[in-house]
Amino acid sequence: SKLQDKVAYVTGAGSGIGKAIAMLYAQEGAKVVVSDINEPHGNEVVELIKKEGGDAIFVKADTASAEDVERLVTRTVEQYGRLDIACNNAGIGGTQAMGADVSIEDWKTIIDINLNGVFYGCKYATQQMLKNGGGAIVNMGSIHSITAVPASVGYATAKHAVLGLTRNFGVEYASQNIRVNAIGPGYIDTPLLDLLPAEQKDALIAKHPIGRLGKAEEVANLALFLSTDEATFINGSYYNIDGGYTAV
Ligand code: NAD
Image 1: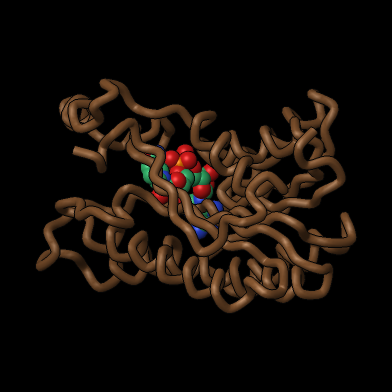
Image 2: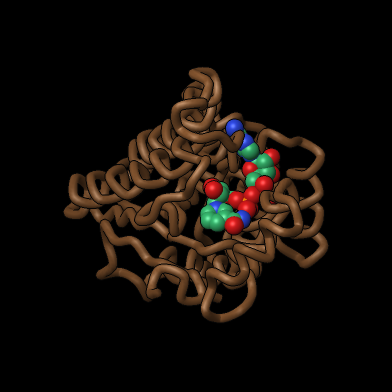
């Protein structure tokens, strides 16, 4: 197993990509704190992990709340004694509107969850990792960390900023054995996309040279790699996983 005896938390682990990452971490031997704002979904994932013989608990946390994220780290350490891997994955698609029409409330909401939540994760995870000799942080960016997405300026802005966060934390703590990296998935077939009309989903598929959407499990494989000791020289980096979307 690639993560034997490691302790990890995954935010937004009740669904989609976060769920796939939490499951894979557990399959590779990690003790996993499944965190989400959605309690039933989070508990379901814990049950799935236990059914497979893994070790997991659920901790409810709204990543837009610094207090919640701090508590997530505290609870992780209370339960498992340390924190080796922090996957700051939780995010929302947000309301669609052209930039001039975005409400201030919607802007603040998406920045709170998709950007501030990742900062809180980096901050509190790093504090703990410094105490336990290091760790790996994996932040969930997007292809929209490096490309625009019409009618979602808050999403693109937050995801771009996740790269800045990732690079800065990576640089600041590199000498203390903490690695911080980001992943940029293309469009992945998760409940996040269920909100989109079918025509829009087809148009999205067409933007991926590979001719399909990605799978959450494919993204989880990359998150796993960056979390393991196979990736010990990778720090402050960003990896696309997008079926060729950004190569066109
Ligand atoms: P999803 O909607 O399937 O799952 C997201 C999970 O996050 C849900 O369980 C939800 O309850 C939880 N969540 C939402 N707001 C939260 C909050 N404030 N605090 C804690 N948990 C919260 O979405 P997904 O597709 O798995 O997306 C996961 C991440 O991947 C997001 O950051 C998203 O931006 C990113 N991403 C997704 C895609 C895609 O196409 N699906 C592509 C690139 C990046």
